[in-house]
Every structure is written in C-alpha cells, then in structure tokens.
Image (cartoon, rainbow, N blue to C red; front, side, top):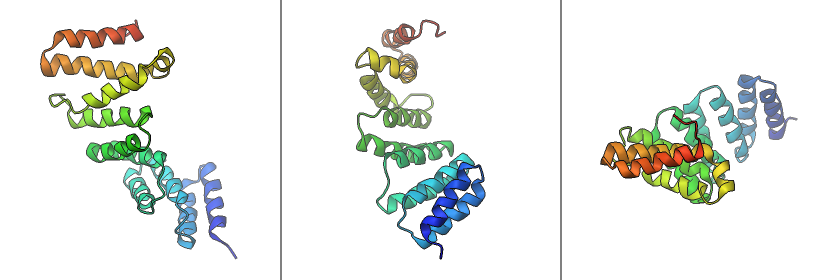
Length: 189
C-alpha cells in the first residue's frame, strides 16, 4: 500500500532528475493523500517557477500560506513569481512579509525597492526611496557588509541619485549618491 511519503519521495526524485511534469503529478498525489504536508506546496511551486508557470506557482504558495505553514523563503519565491508576472503591488506585499519576519535581512528590502521602482517608473512619487534607504542602512554598516552587499548598495545609490536629480532637481544630493557608487566601483560609467 502506497502512502503519501512514497509519492512525495518519488516526486522529489523525479524533479531532481529533470522530469518535472511527472514530478508534479506525484507530488500532487502525495498532497491528495495528506493535504497537511505543507512543504509539498513549496516543492510544486518551485517546479512551476522553474517552468516559468508563475501563476500556478503563486497559487501553490498561497495554499501553503493559508495553512499557516509558510516560511520566509515561501514569501520570497512567491514575490519573485509575482514580480515575473509584473504584479508589482502584490509582489511588494509578499516581500513586505519578509521584512516583517526578518527585518535585518537584506532580501526583503531590496526586492521591495525593485517592486516599488516598477510601480513608480519615473520616480516622481519616490515609492522605492524608503526601501533603497533601508538597503543602504543595512548594507553600509561596516566594510564587511559593504563588500557583501556591493551590488545592492550600487543599485540603491544609483536609484537615489536618479531620484534626487529627476524628481527633485536636487543636483547636490544626486551627485553625493553617485559619488558613493564610484567609491564602491571606480569603473562604473
């Protein structure tokens, strides 16, 4: 007699060998036998995201959230799928959950910044500004953090430079931020 874990292990093995379509079928069979196996929702969603079936991935993550079993990574992956679907407001909501659960984690803040930058492409409202400032607050704490978060800091300073220059005609603050980019990467054109 086959039990839920038999289907789950078989599905994970199939996924690991690149047989994702069959893997989803087996993982869904495992869920049919035991709907409380919340991690299977994440496994199925990851396969859907890999296949660029982001709408279906979001549905799986939402089911796990409804069970009250979601972890930070589930919100991140769901946010990424929503971002790929260009549903930037919903992506921001998913990423905001990361900042709520782990406020010192850079990931939630940088992705909230990216989502809000897409909601406000001309930066007139400055929707991304507080999130990029938070990225800088976390990433520029010390030299170790500055190296670790180099890419995120450059993106943040570039955004702030553009924001001050384009939205506020504040050349002084724009130049200050762009100089920080050059301080991090002297080859940045």
